[in-house]
Length: 254
Image 1 (cartoon, helix red, strand yellow):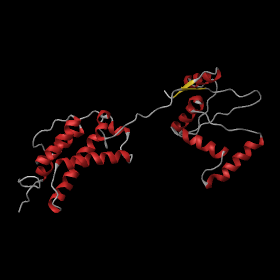
Image 2: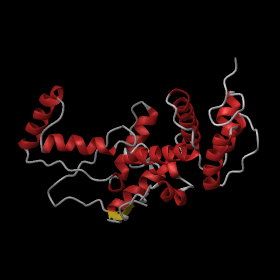
Image 3: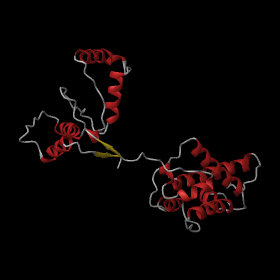
Image 4: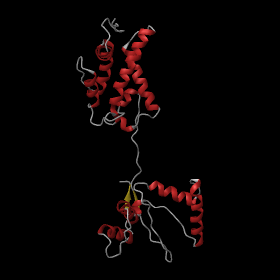
């Protein structure tokens, strides 16, 4: 025997419960008005989700326009069960409040990030969510400095792309201590060699170490030994060498 809808006298089907029932329709329209989505009467599940998924230019996995439909379905289902088994009236306002409350909890728990509101920053306050635009440090000038008279500077760069933080960590382990136990013997050996000639080791951003950075990247791509002389150095490499020679700055952070 078919079940009756918990909010009206119609026969309960999946389509009716989640899409067409008076309660479901009120909930869907409440949030569709916020997002500015046009709902079609008696549209199926697939079309309903596609309408939300493709309603914005920046919608991706986890975006607010994909989360709201899922929350609506979930709380319609829990409200239906409360009405059937606990005799709690199936009211649209309770479902709507639960959606709002859950979105607020997701934001507070940092499960919503800036990207999940992309294109919809203006509606975030409606859900009690305050989004701050990530701040970026201002651009800075980076120089390669020539060493003092009587000293030599060796520029190095590990052949690992886009991992500048690893260089900083390695230098910190050598100069300050720390690091995994299995490299401690190597670190002690490096410190011993540095102490023999009063050598120092420092970090410089890749913008101030462009020649070594370019050669390291090229080594990563070639995966074989290659040696340049001053005569066959490629034009780009030679240009970067001239920038360092004349003490010209490069910009970091643009």
